[in-house]
Structure formats: C-alpha cells, structure tokens
Amino acid sequence: MFFDTTLYGSYELAILLKIFLASLAGGIIGLEREKHGRPAGLRTHLLVAAGSCLMMIVSEAFFMKYGDLAATGVVRLDPSRAAAQIITGIGFLGAGVIIKEGTIVRGLTTAASLWMVAGIGMAFGMGLAGAGTIATFLALFSLVILKKLEPLLKKDRYLHLTVSAKAHPDIYPTLESIFSNHHLRVSDIEANLDIPANRIRYSFVITQHKARIGRELSKIMAEIEGVETIHFK
Image 1 (cartoon, rainbow, N blue to C red):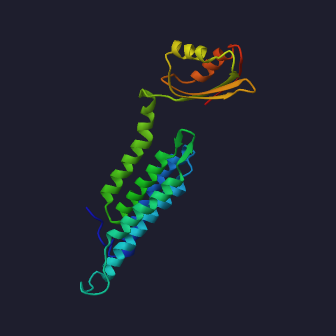
Image 2: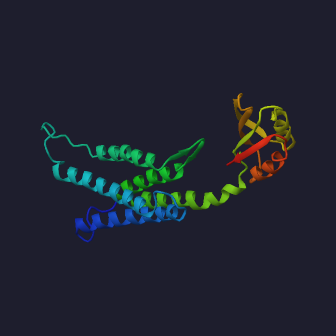
Image 3: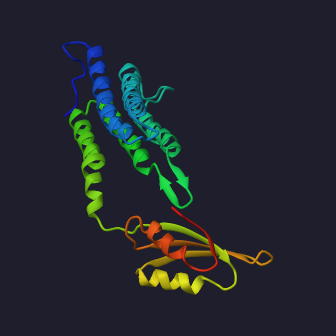
C-alpha cells in the first residue's frame, strides 16, 4: 500500500521517486489546464503537487527523527499538522484563480484541480502510490472526458441583454412579446429611467435559449421604433 521507506537501500532515492511521481501527476493535469489558457497551468500545478509532496516528506522526516522522544518531554509531534496546513494554504491559491465578471464566475474548475493536485502530491509524499495514481486518472477523466460530454447535457444558458430607447412610447410591452414568441424566460430585469432626457434602459437576464440568440434578438429589436442601442453578452 505504501512505498518502502527506502529504495534499493537508499532513503534519498525513495524521496526522489515520490517527488518525481507527484511532479509528473501535477504536470499532466496542469498541461490540460494550460491548453485551455487558464491562469494556473502546467508550472503552477506541477509546483503545487511537488510542494505538497515535499511538505509531507518533511513532516514524515520530523517524525522519523524525533518520534522516539519520550512522551513526557516538551516536544510533541503530530505529522498530520503538515497535511492540515497544506489543505488550508491551497485555499488561498485556489481563490486567486477564481474570477467574477458580473454574474459570471470563471476559474472554479482550475481552483478545484489545484486542490486535487495538492491532495495527489500529499498522497505521493506519504508513499500512497496507488491512491495518487488513481486520483490523477480521475482528475484527467473529469477535465478531459467529462468536458466533452457537456454539449450533450441540457442546461440553462444566460444572456445579459441591455436595450436603451426613448422612454415614450414605452417599448417594454413589445420586448415582452418578443420574449414570449421565442419561449424565453426573463429571470431578472432592471430599468433605469432618465426623465429629463426621455431615455430608458432595460437590462435583462434571459434563460432557456439556444446559442447565439443574442444576435437574433438584436436584429428584431433594432426594428422597434425608439430603440437606440442594444448590448448583449
């Protein structure tokens, strides 16, 4: 289940093998993120895996060096503390790759992969070669194979649509009719009325639509009398 403490009689060779396997696993997962242009890619994942592995090795080394001290002494050793601090510390790194743009959140998968890579590094650091290898394949399965299945899953898409027009006559009934004809659901709406300028701006969040519906709606709304600008994303 665990690595032997030594490899060919050498403790240093066993350490090098652990770090190599952790770096290899982290690098493979990071390469997938790198190909998708994510901020945490090959180097970041490799460093997280290797660093987590090294911390576990150091924790193990402390116990091997001082574990025979008397229980009544001043020094108290708990190897699990290093693992706990790795899990806590990786949370800050993961938070750094999460980006929020309006209501859109990006980077959650990359943050999760960093967290997973830290666990993989810890597994190899403790000598759990089987667990680390299986976790690596599971991470790659999630990032590569399951991603290809996403287009087959029916899910809500969100369109952020902003329409500016003259306040009178009000274009809202016409917009509502367009949404109804296309079987769209408005999940959120915001209106900004500028009375002196006789201008109104509607901001919608629309769901239950097909891809690229924004361009189709823009062409229809552009023909409405009084519409001045249309913006969607």
